[in-house]
Image (cartoon, rainbow, N blue to C red; front, top):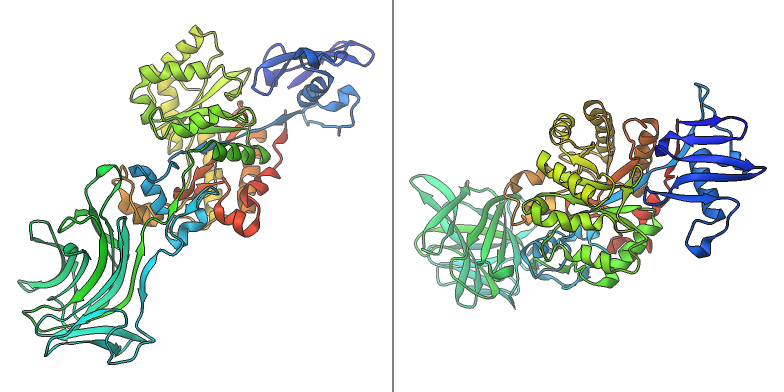
Length: 613
């Protein structure tokens, strides 16, 4: 609220706390006592002064600040009249827009970086690759064959065939199914082998497979030289018919049951040389479902160079093979470890009106690298920053806290409400951590930090806020399942703003730009043990206009709920959670196909200003 005092014309503004006073000193001359600066602190100015050369706010700054506080009409500027039903005045305000940064984009030379690159390497996910990504293998497909154009009765083209007397290896028309397939039959070993260039990195190999009578020891082998890295077969064991794979000790482990005359889609991902010296491993999928994860190779090999299908030497067997594909698993490198990339990111964010990045604060390398590049950038004053603290930070809280608090006085650290440093806790917080942070700020003669705790439900957020003594609540992200439309996500998240406000009081609304974690199902992260649920964790992609409309709704919510959003900021999920499905950072496909960062262009058009009582 603002109020006018006496005939002199003195105006105060509660919105900015005590001391924000605009006073007429004669004629058209005014003096503004303590107006808010860009960091949430206060500066002094008068519209009769022009002392910019001294580093103080000049007349333009004064007019800008005064307009932000009370509207330009009191200064003789052309501004619309704003009326409020209760007879008071309304205050023009500006909402701060932040965006979460998760900085795993540091190349494939470590396990998380390699996982990130693999999640976005498949064709269907490459549209999410960040603008700085390199397509390292533009022709990743080593084998792709459906046999349909080949001559019936002939040997499969490009395959080395072994067909002793009494066996068959040929292309055949498929009864009851359109097209052709490779057919292997015999009472002794028949085989077909496809060689390809030796690969030192991970491969993804897929095919379709059917046995006329299941469990007859038909087999598939992925090899490197003379070593069999991965071996799959079918067997009949005590009446059960099973797909099995072989372990290093020669034992067979069950993948799943199989049936006669039934097609199965098989996919294996095999890595002979994982990052950071990990042991070679294979994942096995059947009909799109992962059945085996991180199994060891049958025999060690540093490369992969051939795929073989065969029949048993001891049983009469008929097997059909179709739609064979082998491709390099990791074809992209999203390396963001250069100053040039960071400077471009800052430029893009500034142009879109992003006020600050909320860095998930990693003390350790290489995840700290992005934050260090931001600090080193000559542009770092264009976009502010603040910290999101999770277990990586809090696991060594006593060591990490002083380093963070020392950064609170940086001119580009984001502040709210009379200069209070903005801090988010994600994944839990304790009263002890909060007390120690406030005490450290007090000792450093810094304003009390504005502490926001993130939780997945309104009640858990409210409980945590009370338990630890935080100031506000928020949420990291919101997602829907099984391909629900983005509009459902928006409706749900909008309702969450109200729920969090009712339960906890002060809120920083989250604006989720999407949710699709299926890439992490195909290529699980080392730390994500519950990967099985991720195949259902996806929402349909949002258009840039839908994202902008959702942000506009959050700004309006803040302005219509001033008592619940005193810090007047919203938080976008996310700047760069590409493989989780939430991003606004420009992508390679946007810039190549449209020549513009479409999501940021839409966001830039969203007004940040609004009216509060």
